[in-house]
Length: 79
Image (cartoon, rainbow, N blue to C red; front, side, top):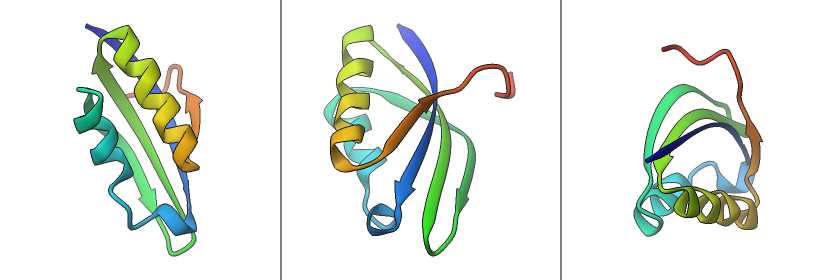
């Protein structure tokens, strides 16, 4: 199993949508929430994602297609 740490930034219209749940379920990815901040206008999540390399790529591509900004995270995740 591969692991990737990512920061997700959700636009206002996606804050209340279960986008992360759908990604996890549809692509067999285990998300581990490391940090979260949600306001009325933006949502930010730092996640550690675990799954096969192919599923991680497909899941991240799905998030991007939904309008979520995805950026890699290095170094500031709690071990």
